[in-house]
Image (cartoon, rainbow, N blue to C red; front, top):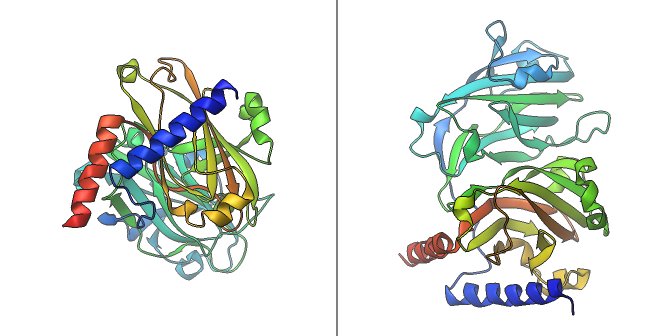
Length: 345
């Protein structure tokens, strides 16, 4: 057996033992959101499509006002199909806490992507020329903590192919996840993505892979009805303050099973990476992933490469929800002990 296989089996067993020890249930409830900011109001609106409209410094004073949520056809743009943008702002002074902040945008017809302070935090559907609608998908996006400023600009780019268009329905607002893992390093956001059983073999060319938002189902991001193998990849740098810490990689929930590599070393998996594992472990998509890292595996002030291989047999697919990032082992165990205590009360 090679070194990677030995480490993978060892740490995979260690994960299972620790999870049993601290009493974590494999089948956990959905995220526990609390609304902390109401965004059902008038937003700035313009038809057309310019990437500069995502910039928080863009002057939108000449734009129209529009009610959110509502179909733009009912607000003076009857019969318009095509691109349009929405913009609004929020202040952190409005919020009791910016930890685990989420933006809930409801139902958007047909395709959209969302920016906070100029950085894309989510996308659902696929824009032309490879158009794929997602009008019936209710969306909530994680706002990475390092993006949040005193005053924050939200910009939503929308494409409507026909019928009603825009941010049409839902409880639009800012939410916090009361059960979120308090990450020390947030790795949510834009990752690289490639479908195929052997996609991992082209990891050296990951820059040419597609972009995908994590967390989020891949079927909501232009890979509709795709079942099978795929790979996620991310390059990141780590502050040397964490080098002497034992760290855990949190990967939320994954549909269905996964293998995870850090800097070329297998650090854990949720079962044999074969279709039969899914049928044997039918609840694997509900399990929160937390992989304990060998202390000498992370590199300081240089690139670390994270590779997540996923096998999905039906629906959804991919790293679809939860806290994504790094946390010290002490913080991680304390988090689960606190959560276990709350569940008993």
